[in-house]
Image 1 (cartoon, rainbow, N blue to C red):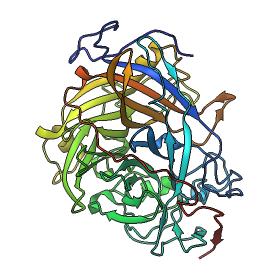
Image 2: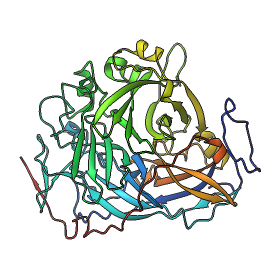
Image 3: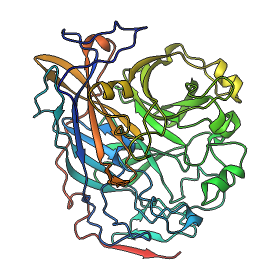
Image 4: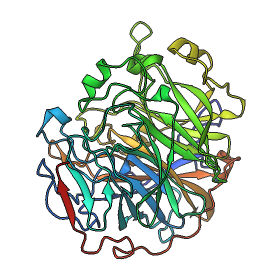
Amino acid sequence: MFAKRLLAVLVPAVFPVLIATSAHAGVALIGVGQISGSDLSGLSGTLENGVAGNLLGGIGSGIAWAGGDSFVMTPDRGPNAVSWNPAVDDTSSWITRFQTVNLGLSGATFSTGAVTTLTPSLTATTLLSSTAALNYGSAPALTGSAGQNYFTGRSDAFAAGLSTDSANARFDPEGIRVAGNGKSVFISDEYGPYIYQFDKATGNRIGVIALPDKFAVANLSSQGATEISANTSGRVANKGMEGLAITPDGKTLVGIMQSPLLQDGGTDGSTVRIVTIDIATGKVTHEYAYKLDNIGTPSKPKYPTVSEIVAINDHEFIIDERDGKGLGDGSKAAFKKLYRIDLSGAQDVSSLSGAGALAAKAVDKTLFVDLVALFVANGLAVTDIPAKLEGLAFGPDVMVSGLLEHTLIVTNDNDFLDTVGGAANPNQFFVLGISADTLPGYAAQVIPEPAALTLTALGLGGLALRRRKP
């Protein structure tokens, strides 16, 4: 699939264009891998739509480095590609979770001019729960044998009130980052949008970060289209807080919306909001504006969405902008780009509203790498580039032909579909090698080495679930 040759894609405005044979390779594809099968949740049986409750899928919605070769990954609200009940947008009683994967970077050999095939392995599955009671609405309530109240992907698991009510059981994980001490994870979602903190070992929720009401919708529905039509402000349905970063010092979370808020133009708007949060206090400190590329025409604009944000240091970040085309969509990938921004000189927009007002204050951005160009240059057809390249995480530094390089992992959300139209559609990993001179301000997050996790340690040995109607 991938040609055995080195190809680097750089930004002419910032870096010289190199077809690298030197020590300064810029950004290159150095490794690929994939994973599929069943997870380690201990769950058995099927969901309402007939899909196995332990299906390993969609795990590239978010990825975070957990130290060493270990990464934690979030599938979103579960498998809903099978039609069974349009009243709940075909969502099911999927227990939201994160997966822990060993990518095997330390044992791999990377060489200039080659793409190494990795063999990722699943090491743990952690179900997400609350000790406090949750609002399941008209959805089946999911409780564990030890009294856990599990979060669910069902779109009808909510009570009346603002969508940011932290007692609602519905949860659509997207961004994930490991806390500085390595003992907990922060996860952002699209239903609220919420940002929750979970114990990394048990999956129990230990913290809630409240976002301003401007991000919430007041009229909730189990159907996304109905919810959009019923609100004029707040997040667009299924396009909430898609991306989440943590600064290397572990002190600040930086979240980004997938699409503009309704009051900022919704999916027709050009500018999304970035939110910074002080972890110690749980308070939102700033809002910034980020302008999307126009992938339409001047007379008929069309905008991509944002899937992820990852920290280079405490003020610079990389943002993933993408279309929805490619493998899994039955079309040709065209726009999947990573941009670099610096918030140190950005203007706060927390008091502003409206597409025009935000666009005028948008932070400057610089193209970091064009993923479509990079992958095509390495022999991948545009129809084989995953439609949903959604996860970004820096990993451990690796040696590439004797030179130390940073790694940036790119992952896809395959929507729990291993095949689409007869074509393989696995959960994939793309490892980018980045020369040190390309990211001179890069600071790696310092995370304690992860302890070995087992099903017993997670409290999932012989797990029995009770599903009941409230």
